[in-house]
Amino acid sequence: MKDKLSMVVFSGDMDKVMAALIIANGALAYDMEVTLFFTFWGLQAIKKRKKTGKTFFGKLLGFFLKDISRIGPSKMNFGGMGRWMFKKMMKKHGVMTLEELLDSAVQAGAKLVACQMSMDVMEIGKEDLIEGVETGGVASFLAEAQEAQFVLFI
Image (tube, rainbow, N blue to C red; front, top):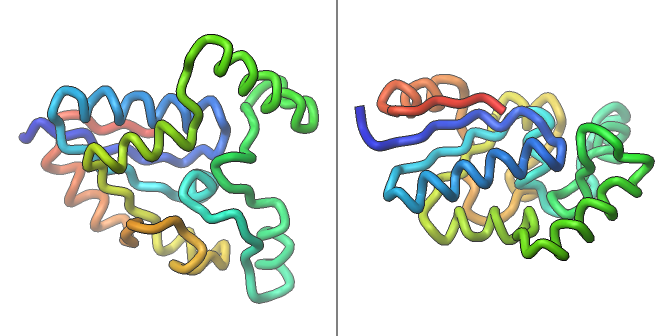
C-alpha cells in the first residue's frame, strides 16, 4: 500500500463536498497521493456553471444541477438562504470557500476523476467539467483504491 487516499465523492451537498476537500487537502499536506472520484450528485463539485443535457429528461435534470459555487448544505438550506448564511459564517471565521479548497487540492496535485457512467446517465459531457478532470469508470476507481492506504466514501 502507498501513502495514498482514494475517495468517492457521491454527495453534492455543500457540507459533504467541503469535508471531502478538507480531507483531501489534509492528505496532500502529508505528501499523500490523492484521487477524488466524483459520481452522481458529486459531479456538481467539478461541473462548470452551465446547463447540461440533450434530451428532455437530461435538460430537466440539467436545470437542477449546480456548480460548486451554488450547491447548498444538506440541512438547513432554506431555499438557498442556508448556503448564503454558511458562506458568510465561513468568511467571518477565515474558512476557505469550496472553490478555494478545490483549487488548493488541484494545485497540490490531487487527481480528479469523473464517473463516466454517471456523466452518461446525467447527460454531462467532458466539456461541461472544469479543466483537468479525467474520466473513468468503477474499474479505474477500484484500481486506484486497491493501492490506497485510505479509501473513503462521502
